[in-house]
Image (cartoon, rainbow, N blue to C red; front, top):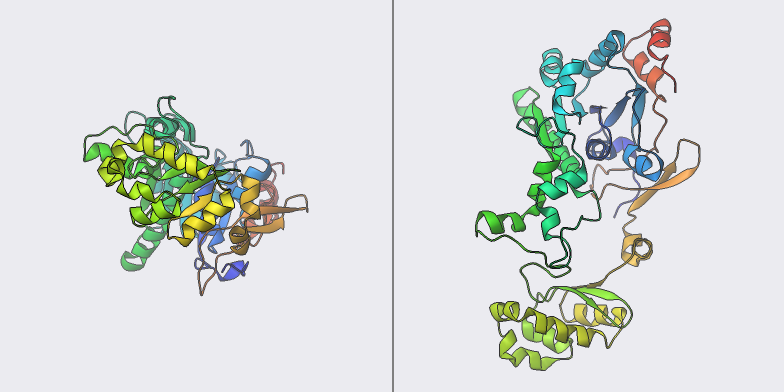
Length: 388
């Protein structure tokens, strides 16, 4: 169980990561690396517009922050010095921007051959859309994800979270870790990159291969499972439950209080249940309306049929299992108050991940980090002159 462990003892302790990212996808990757113990240094453009409020606090905790204007020669030289001492650089500019700034992979790897250079873009580093601006909802639409989300016949629906951002950030974390392992073997770093579009299509998973392998264009199924019947959401006497009858069909029918369904030829096997899904859903809906959510959760789980309530976010964080998992941590915000942020959902038995510090103002560690790079006070005064 997560025990709000010492952040200095994480599995990536001793690694230095330079974070050039903005918005959500890139900061998701660097947040994960920071939670696992890496020293993540955000290099912030003084002119850059940042996310604010709880969203920013959740993405930027556990990191150090400095301001450097990378269009300035003196500041870029300081960045080069920083990159020479780093293990990883993460960026999510549009593909052409990093080279225009003089901080692309070829430039930095020439100075630091062991560097792992990690990139996220909207649509890939090359190709006809490479230099388009990319955000989550555009990737959701282009990937096909919106076409399989929502009630049948209702038109495309956006997923309720920034799924391509968080997917791309998580995939890039995996890529960084794999490249660091490869460096142990080869002694060299490499460039690893992904995109919102690639991540969203990959998260389509079995829906994507229904087309690639079976030639079937997946339709919308609303709250029903696309291919397993009867798996879906049903209204109860006082709420809703998700039901996934993975046990024997007869067992589910008995737990439902409708044993006659086991002998109904319309529902005899997977194919017939799929063909008669609408009738079966109506029968289950009628039965579910006779008892409360809590009663169905208890009864179906006792019979070996996975079942759980459908909760609002406030109800989720009041759930006893969620409380037991310590799914969030409380840290200080830039104004000295306290805020709650989500923890990394991984538990390490020997080198635990942790949220040790809250977010800071963009210029908070500029002088400290420049001093670590060997700059004297006069040089720091010049480089740190950007407003806080």
